[in-house]
Length: 464
Image (tube, rainbow, N blue to C red; front, side, top):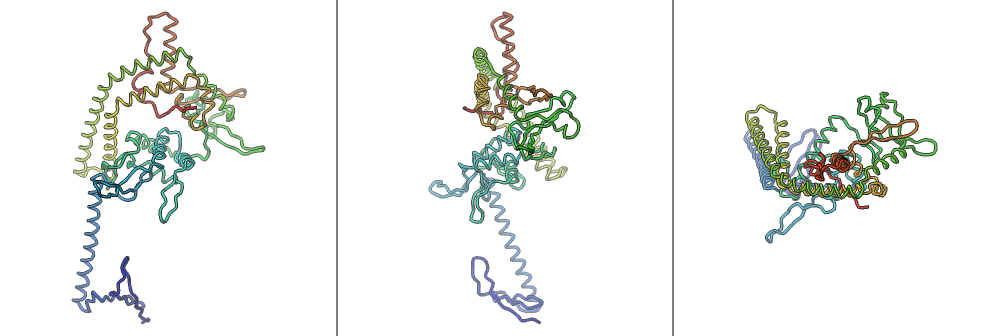
């Protein structure tokens, strides 16, 4: 037997002098001044009963906490520390201070920007994380941790979190929250689609970044029925760093097109942008056509609302069927949770559309007018813009740029966006009509319709 050692145990937050632990080697014996049940079977029985009661109290306390948290979530309250982009604050409601969630005026705009940029499908998470770091986005400082830039994994978790749409995910279900949504459910679903697609394809982040990345395709491969992108590369050699684009198929031995020097590519892209210019007469004609289109689109708004309501009813019926499958136990719980969550987000997105179809039409038309402004002198505008905004201008004009490299020169063929193609088609028809001396009523081009004017992706023309 070793020497027994006695010491006082102090439970957290309170000193206790009524409990003494006697420790001896090799065994350990607990001796309680309050609960000394003695030896024998009665002492053992009392000790067992006390353990059961203590365990019951712990479980009851835990269950009480879970119930209170569930009730809070059901009433729209947020549990735990505020998500990045929000703040835990105390506000006065009817003379009573209440803990609640408020929008972080510093970080929230950057979180919104991150969702919008990722939805363009032009940036990887790593690239977006670097851009956010450059703009100063950091985690919140705490007593134990200093503020630091967001990591790629933290950014990925934010992009997957439906909390930013105004809902709360708790115990596998989504509940409407009282906090202010930062993004629409439609934008959130668009981001999820890109994330899911990249996970399936195993898309990797690239170390290097250039504003043309992701827009350039190999014309040589296109002529042979393949789709191959050009990837940006930097090589260090004698005299400095050399930048160029090379076909991904060439890297695998399937393409013979030479690499394209970056400076030649940039010059050719600038020439293609300049070729998008409209003259003053065409600009005035397009503006008048857009005004007429607005009147027609507003008249068709009710038809779209009816279609959305029909879609909403189908989703509600689908939700009911999923609940029935859950009751029958014919579907895995995790798969059921994912389907129900997706249906809930879709219903929310449709509800948002029902409340703002007219606003979307007006917003789309406003963007169409702004886009027409870009066509007045795109070359001058492109020259003045920084690289990141140049990319936005390019994606407003083109969906892809097909690069052909020969021994003598670099040439680029373009595929225009739907709106840009519609405006150019309309101009061609308008000129053809004028040259043929047909009736003065202008023929509508297929581009100036509701899907084009309303469905413009988030390019906001920059002010030079």
